[in-house]
Image (cartoon, rainbow, N blue to C red; front, side):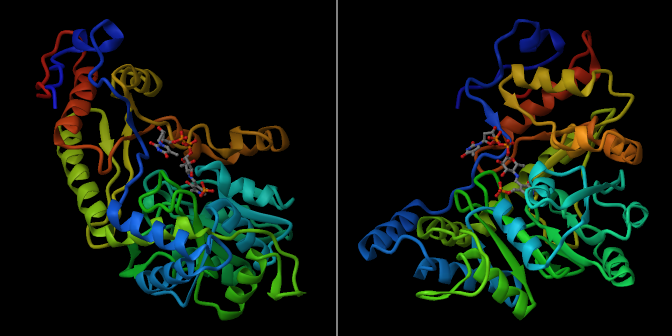
Length: 401
Ligand code: T4K
């Protein structure tokens, strides 16, 4: 690899006319891809079989292996996480109002709105970025039927407190575990909490099936309902016993999933190595903090999330712009919060009044690239840009190369 330019001060930055650090963009969410010959072998097999979808052998194997990996009784594979969320909320018979965080990807809210269920946004804990149980309590009305917690960044939502609230008010409880594949809480894999949990296996996720998702649950009758709904409600060749949709995962997606599942230890080790380099680097930069993971739990370390404190001399958006100029495509996930997107902003213009922490966190977070396409040299270079911004125009910072 060609040596990267040293960034010794802000004079060396692309926003000030220097060459960008990287010739090609570094993305947040570059897909992790397992053993290519294995994937191609599975692809050749499925083509030979001419069985491409509709609960084929690879999907069945995939479901069996995912359930075994998570320790859940059931895994129902889906075409994507959004449809999986929609089917899960239907199977749980959610209606009226459902409490969700606003600080999440828009699909968590849209999956409800799409079914004319009102997402009611509750505030988050500014330290964990997950739902604040007391804020959830404040949003409960006679129309509330459920809660969807999100395990943001792969760190568990407050599952014990949310369970207590759901029990107290007779609410359904499910989780959007899109970020949480291969993560645990209290030694139990995410996927085992609430009435059911939903994963996204989108290309940008830690574990991907190109596009894909799953509903996982330990409830046999719920699993049966979800399976029917995934396949138009068919219970036999000519027999439909339920309203359903098409949420099926394809065989090629399952082939990718099975291949990536075999490489999951490698993906995790790479992400962890990257995270540790970031951790050491960020520790020396005043005004920045890095989201911490509980070391006693399993983590996928997929999200390198930094927060800019008020003492950082450059605004969050100018920092992102500076990184982009270097071809480091950092993201402002999940700015500006679902409540500031449509149709929610128009329908619930006062929602922000109850979302102080959401607004605060959404304004100071940056997600940095990681994954199997990044090495130490690239990460040190990214850190050198952040350090240059922290030090200011005349300061000297450590060279990246
Ligand atoms: N709930 C939560 C909490 C979620 O985070 C998501 C998905 C869902 C539910 C819904 O699950 P799905 O229905 O998607 O299965 C991306 C993803 O499209 C979305 O799946 C994901 N969350 C979200 C956090 O990120 P964008 O708009 O940021 O995607 P985009 O196109 O900007 O891609 C991100 C970066 O990844 C880009 O810099 C390019 C790079 N990339 C992307 C793809 C698709 C690649 O390098 N290769 C690729 O194949 O939404």
